[in-house]
Amino acid sequence: MEAIAKHNKVTMSARKARLVANLVRGMEVQQALSVLKNKPQKASPIIYKLLLSAINNWTQKQGDLTAQKNTTLYIKEIFVNIGKVLKRIQPAPQGRAHPIRKPSCHINIVVTDRSVIPLQTIKSTLISKQKEEVMVSKATNKKKVSESKEKKAPKKTTES
Image 1 (cartoon, rainbow, N blue to C red):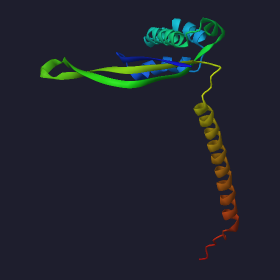
Image 2: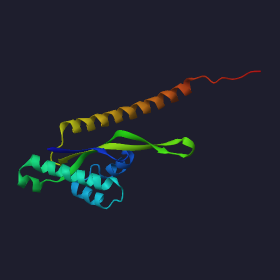
Image 3: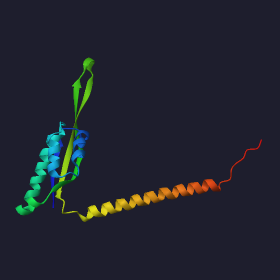
Image 4: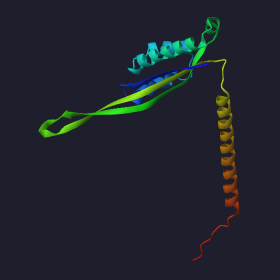
């Protein structure tokens, strides 16, 4: 069972929030909480609170207390999208103005237990492995074809 937590219009750039989000992607929840607690970045406490919210959402969805104690949660998805950019102006000398950009972002976390692996995830991993195999086979075929063309091509000689 999955639980989702969203935080929209966070006043920070998406690039800075992604640095922290990439650290905890795929981790177990307890490990991720300890990592977030000790990071100095501005996004760490925001993602920490959002992760706690996702955990609470999962427990409310689950309902059964015995099942909650026996399961280990992990972060299935965490992604940061770009939000609106507030544009302001800082007055500058001689009647000019310097632009100030105040970016925002949207952070989403999906938490689930390890026992549930959706069929879609299994299919996507199998498809990606098949694509990699096809790409490797195509690359080796191209090498073989180019080698055979080099052998078949007659050598040009210049006569003066």
